[in-house]
Length: 316
Image 1 (cartoon, rainbow, N blue to C red):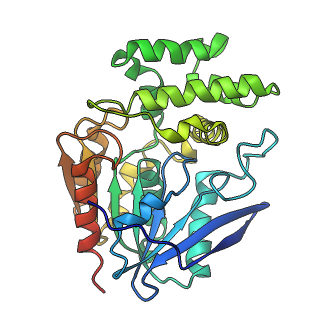
Image 2: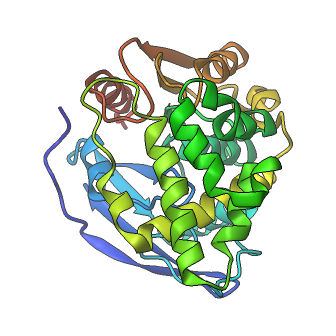
């Protein structure tokens, strides 16, 4: 249902400050409509699958690994990696540096899950640089949602959540995201690895809402688990450094920017109400609800809606 696999025609690393170098790549048509991909997580990195959402004849696609993950350096998986300069504000500045570095004036922003939060924050701060927004599995980083995904959602997956809570040890009586962040910074590598396994097992369990779900193969990689779990807990415990209602209350800043919001009705990881509220406050956005889909673009209806939206915005 997506376009054939393509390889980048250019790639490199960009020094963005604070000792960080961000990996980037471009593929498709060098003269096409520029688009930037904002991956989820935080910390999941960009994979080749993201390239296949774009018509390679129509788009100049820019993909990059956000600070600390994927091919960017230093890696958040290193136990001594300093995360103090890895925040939403740093990532937003990195996007602007990358845009200027590649000589892009305006681009289509395509993001999913955490990438949708980052995309909305970017568009609200730099509306003149955004041609359109295509966001799926819309997530809004709020204290309410962090508590939902780490505690309240246990009502839907009681056995899996009991294991998740047990993995936090004595810290399970407080905020689970704080307890896991401490375990992931423990000097003992065995403690860190166990915490990353338990965190990723919970992540995988609450996206399994339809028959035939297969666990993410990337969670089998201990390096990936460590990077992903450490960055997710780092961002969530700080509320992504955004005011709790910043994304929804700032939706008026998106006026004039066309958008598509694609969301699965069965998405319990990021319930539909946030995407619906955003669509009410942003009249230039269309909300597409895919009835038989959960979280992520791996469902046929989700992929189809994302492809349709990107085709809509590819014309010069």
